[in-house]
Length: 340
Image 1 (cartoon, one colour):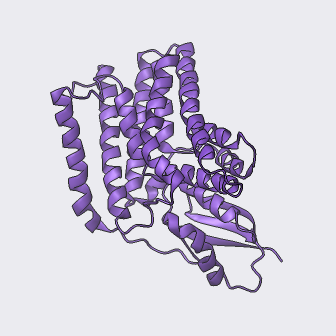
Image 2 (cartoon, helix red, strand yellow; image 1 turned 60 degrees about the horizontal axis):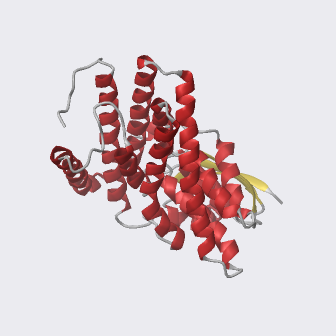
């Protein structure tokens, strides 16, 4: 007999966590319905679990979630902030920022200009995004999908098609967004608003990665939940072109990094510039995502996961502030803050 239970989810910090939680639990044979909530940090599950107690069910359902860093509990658990992680995370983030500034000064790379994010920035943001929960969702998708093809002895082609589809879709759909921006003829005010929006999205994303302010999770913008569910459902299709379609569909997954770049792409007003910006972002995610695709690599269940995410959060906050200030400078609202 099916019953509905509500459990608290520990470790969930963004919209991609919601998709990943629903995807993992929805694949279990005893579960008939699952709906996770980022706002309440909970998941509502309907299924036939026999005579098991809620505590027993929570332990069983935690098994497929634990590799991703999530656990279920009947009662809400207060998550203590591990401040000691910042002892390592802050120096790592500062080292990254200082290296970035030195390279800028030397002219070796020009990742950020005075007025806009360019391809180098998009690539670096992609690198940071590749170790986030966003890419855990994507990696989980391709691994699940590949399992079906592996049964037939086809192990390499699905991953190759997936990555080709992902890179191609990010270029084409990014170009479409850029062209859409030109159709609206964004003026100085429109560009300013979108630049500020990109900065704010990245700031919220970075704060959530720090995992010290629970209220910030409610501020994270996201696409409607049904889009993520439709995308993850594609993995169960066993068709020759399924990997390609899944790669294309990842453009629409609820990921703060992707959304911030999509918003920025609107300001480019160009199909080519918009396409190359999103392509550079997708290319930045490729190295780690390829490892996720061809192995069981995961950062979420490692002892150093807290340090890693806090470092990434601080770096993302840096990029968010940089983009926000550059947008204000370009619009003439404030004087230049940085000279590099």
